[in-house]
Amino acid sequence: MIASAEDVGIFLRSLNDGTLLNEKEMEIYASIYEFNHGGLIPGYQSMAEYHKDIDAVVVQFMNTTDFEGYHWNLLQITHSRVVKILRKSKQH
Image 1 (cartoon, rainbow, N blue to C red):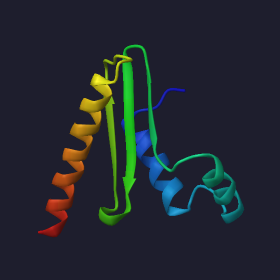
Image 2 (image 1 turned 120 degrees about the vertical axis):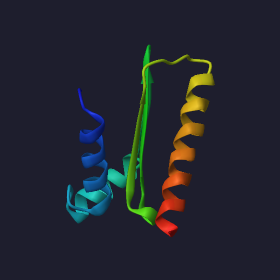
Image 3 (image 1 turned 90 degrees about the vertical axis):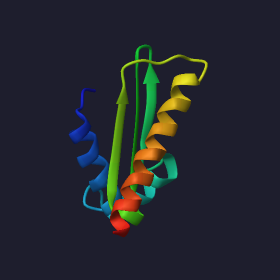
């Protein structure tokens, strides 16, 4: 599947706000999946999460990876820093 950061953001927002699936479909989805996305293949990884408290979808793509976890940890750190900045900006 090919998707841009904007595509992923639109999908995650609609998945989380209930406009993508009906109530029964949401129950099935929630029993199988999380309401965010993260994954990697050789040379590429991504993380996307909806943050209800600030009504924001943060999508991050990284064009490198390793399977030891180092780059994934960097992705998580930078992702959490972006969310922290967005939370602070919402407070003002």
